[in-house]
Structures are given as structure tokens and as C-alpha cells.
Amino acid sequence: MASDDGLLDQAFMALADTVRRRIIARLSRGPATVNELAEPFEITKQAVSKHIQVLEQAQLVTRTREAQRRPVHLNPARLEALTAWIDQYRLVREAQFRNLDAVLQAQAAGRGPQPKDRS
Image (tube, rainbow, N blue to C red; front, side):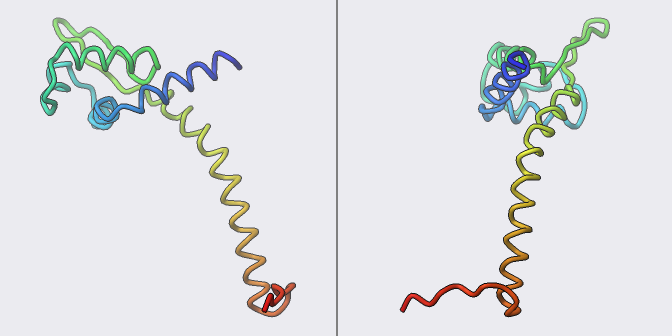
């Protein structure tokens, strides 16, 4: 479990940076080289490469070799793991809000306990 927590920490720290989030967004449309990923940024290709290394360490992206090209690919399984972690808390909150909605609807319909008038 500690290993999972470490990967989760790394992933969220990697995603805390705007440039890295934009790289992830670009890769969601398909693989790209460092040069292609660097195009929209006003930073050096070396800086983009360092951002990619952070994303690789967090296992959010992978690189392959195709002849002279080394495209960067999104790791959808890792993003799915992050989504699953977030969803477990989102689902709990949604259930709490549904329960609150039911209580409020019951009160509005006069079937439940009414709030006490404090005047």
C-alpha cells in the first residue's frame, strides 16, 4: 500500500504543474515527440524533457522508440488509477448529498421534522 501511496503522491505532484498538465492534455490526442510537445511553450526543449521525465517517474507517460523518433505516450492505466482513487471519495459525497436532498424534500413536503424557529 505504501508503494501505491508513493505513486499517488508522485502523480499528483506531477500534475500540480501547469506545463505538465498541458503536456498530458496534448498527449490525450495521441503520441508526440519532445519537439512537438515543446511547440506551444516558451521554454526550452530541455525544460520540456525534464517535465516529461517527471511525468515518466510518476508513470503518467511512457516513451517508445520508432526508428529515430522517441514518441511520448499517455499511460491511460495510470490515469484510470487516479480517477478510481478520486471516484471513491466523489461517490461517498454524492451519496451524502442524495441523503440531504431526500431530507430536504421530505421537510418541504411536510413529512419530516421541520427546523425549529429560533425567533
